[in-house]
Length: 391
Image 1 (cartoon, one colour):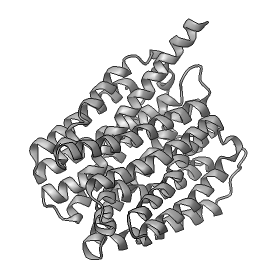
Image 2 (tube, rainbow, N blue to C red):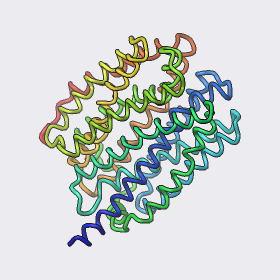
Image 3 (tube, rainbow, N blue to C red):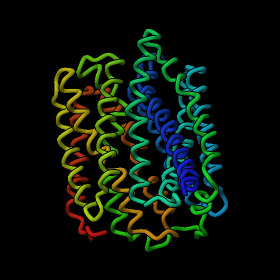
Image 4 (cartoon, one colour):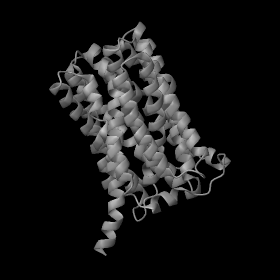
């Protein structure tokens, strides 16, 4: 009996650890690529925003492509290719240190990240022998743990290297390769349970699922400030709060520690039939966090704003995944996840470039305040949509 439990636990633990390695690397690149382009390459905020937009757009296209090719592709192989691609993108951007290599690495990074994100989420929702809500919550706890530890480690590298952004990014290069090795420990049952026979196009009933639409609105709502934070958070901390790059990374750690705590609570007590109510509560907290970030002054208020925004970050993703999984059949789940990620990733296509232009003309504080507008509109949509909350 104990041997069987260990046999089931090892693949899931390997999947969670691989997820942590992947997400910490992805976040390190996302939060550092802005100051890397602006400070080292002397690129304008609008060009930096364009690079981030390019990565987001390619990531969304990768999700759409993946959804249409699920019949012929093995998900684990897709994840392996994406993880290797992320390490390669890091090498390109650091060793090239030019505008062309900056944009080339954005394309590689976006495509690789888009593929890996969808595949790992689908694999986590199909873990044999683990309740779906708890498996997804544990998966998102692994995400938050990596995001809480990653910025802290990056801040240590920055201090030890005298603020070298190149070394900060390069220090994460081995982690996707380690994640690739760990995926070989994930038993084939997980992969096979996700490689189901699906039609080439999305079934109409998947697109009409009101709970899927609610999850999409909730994720897009939070994606707007999250993209602003990951793309320009270090620059907001510098220009609006007078914080160094190292202190900015510590503010990211504050954000992700709160997120980790929130997600850990979901593992202990899943939302169950209160999923929609939790998403609406998260929307209200997001509005409050955006206002504090825009109006705050001083390092304390920066940390307070990041802590407030960490709460909905901890709630929205796992609860949205759980809502979709509970309202979608096993046959349609992978396509529903791909659609969910494709639409929410599309926010990254426009938002960074728009925010970069706003920052160029008006400043980073004004940019932070303008984030409130789309968040408020999406929150209103979330409250107006009528769905069955007992799913």
